[in-house]
Length: 77
Image (cartoon, rainbow, N blue to C red; front, side, top):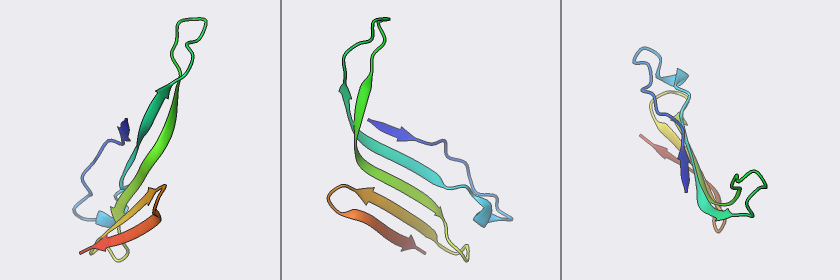
């Protein structure tokens, strides 16, 4: 499964004010159904990514986490 935040364009006059973009991904495992018929899931995270404008606002900062490699930070100009 993947859960992605809504993406909005950065304001042209102030790109550093952009809130960024986030995504989490993983495997959803169904747990026992509730008495009311609801379904519950346990999520095993496989990736978390945050993308934002750097400081100064001339590049993007991409921070990602993966269980096998840990936290990684990259910059794109």
